[in-house]
Length: 556
Image 1 (cartoon, rainbow, N blue to C red):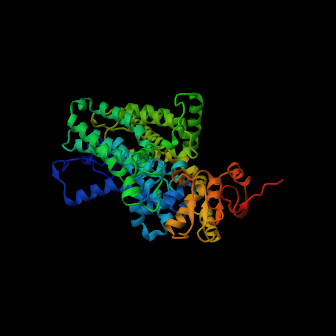
Image 2: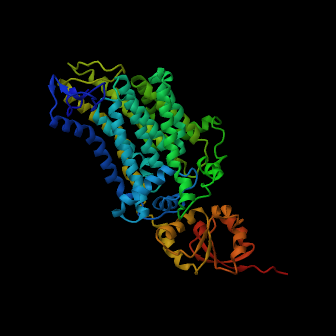
Image 3: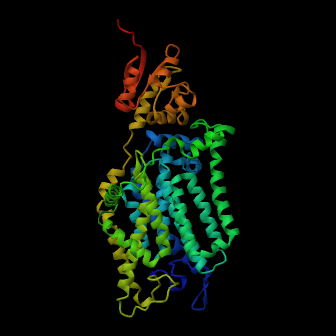
């Protein structure tokens, strides 16, 4: 079925809004105005959805610096430094450029937070474009993109600095490019191979952003083989794709040794300028052991995934299996790609120990939403088939998807709009709670802590900190230019400089320089208080700042 706002002749190979090489309609040449209108109709739906995401989410974006990884990325990206494993060089490079381009919008911390919002907006728009290639309904495609952006875990990750929204954007783009390649290959267009090479480049960039991308390699291999089995007889194309993946990833990963050694950045994690240090970061050796028994305790993991799905999709959770079946029926190769990716990613996520594991589900949420959109389009096709006089035109070999002729456009579009609204109901119902949950605009805890803490340090002080507060202190020192005289000693610094533990650092500097302490928990704090007298200056719990007064005198 063709949307009422696009002439049927513009649609090629069952793809709404994309007709490579179509220059005539009914034997009449396209005018320049026709081409402009056609381009606008293709670009407007994704653009409108992206703008909606920005307008809807922007009020909740965190305004300033944060603790933990948020503070690290807000510091590393503007100065083109190096981050903790796996280094995230693509994210660092994108963030460095974004920080420059977004200069009018506030301080660097806010700009890097804003980058996450822009990434989610891009992902939602790319999802609309992807769905228009997979189904025959612009209203349902738009609803799918909107539904993705309204999903609680997606929305929540759009409001602070983190590489996972960028990962979501890359995955959406990768799907779009792969599906475009498949359709162009089946249409035997001359530029089909270029799209597969483009997909390889996107994969390489995505791998440089987050290693979760590597889980997509087997599904993509299956998809390519299912689409073009004879590709194994094309070593030149395979070699070019391999070179594109490896070359792109290697190129972005050069950021680590260059900024850690050749052109030293103000903040470098570990020693990626050395051969062993580089692989320690790139292969995330620090987190080895976090993955345990992916195939074990499957009933518990299935229940965990089911609860997560319910939290994100509401009653649509009951439709996810039928949605996958509809995807298998209508676009089987896409179902193979996303279905296998879903299985691998869920097995990994449910077996990986991470403090904020919900971030790892952005890809699966995207794939599930495309299935829901395809199910809605499948139901739409069944409904349209009941409209009197609705004569289907043959598609391009994919069952269940094909354009519709003009006499039924109005009623068909009304059905499509109804189905689009229907799949948005959970997101609309949860709108208020999702907005509250995702809103970080009033989260100024880290910014206020930094403002209060910096004046408390005496000149040339040594601050023995830990990851959460170290990142915030780095932001104040490296970005805001505050207190360049103080030496921030993180647990990573202790390891890199062979300083021992927190007590060893205190023993080294106390008596020569003022020493301050921040510890993650009571156990870590107790290891210090058994030997040293502390004076609480600020805060409580894991962000409590103490002055080390002196060594305790042994009694007796």
